[in-house]
Image (cartoon, rainbow, N blue to C red; front, side, top):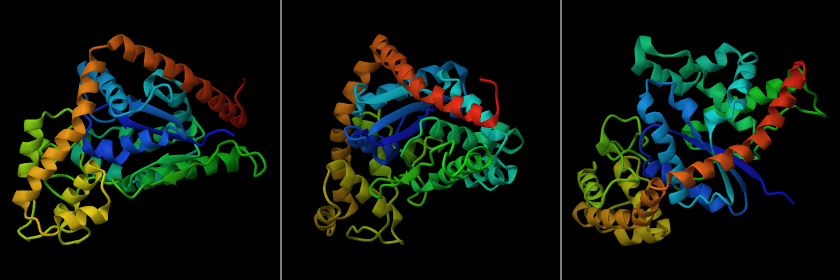
Length: 334
């Protein structure tokens, strides 16, 4: 019996951080033994905002090395670069021609990013969710691991698939498989160190807001020491008036591999002066083996190139037939 298939990816913009690791990559590592995992570097998405061409390729290798350093096994999972498969762009165009403009105008993330870019906002940024739908549907996954903030994009993907099936398929013979969202509660949304109500993000202008997976021990300790807190004594989970407390406790829980109940009991009477050094030490030790492996991989570019070449071949073997199936259903000459 075949394993259930999942598909996910991360943009190749800057260094990956704890939110990427705890909210996504670590979950993929746990799933790869009993799932068929297709994991890609989303470099086409990276150019929907202004970017530096000189660092795009290097960032792509950094993300690939981070995947493997965090425990993604190329023998179990398919790791590939989005832009190396033209099927992504071609299917996105076909989807553009069946997706109502109103669906894209309602997307929350576009509205938020468009405000920041002003007159320089690109069509690509608005069209981002359609390319994302193509990324997903090409591989006909059973489920897609998503954070709470990505649920709207996956719903759009499902709507596009349903529309293609309605217009060009039938109930008995749908054109595309409609995937289910896979949302894990623990670590699904790691928050900023400077604002516990906002998600930890690579795009935040403040480096203090996040812990990059490549930060050295001194930088990690300094960022945690400066992390926003509150004046209350004693630490607790799930108090809506203490978002930073919940976030830092959640980080400690995930990085120390303890249960929520155990952490709540351990930290109940602690003050920040006692807890922050504990969190810093735990974070440094959790990231140490990842960082050592990452630096080894970045110095072995031949190995990374081979992994990505193998990944492209395996991904294309799935993507090409899916694209051909959609084109045939839409009436193109085959």
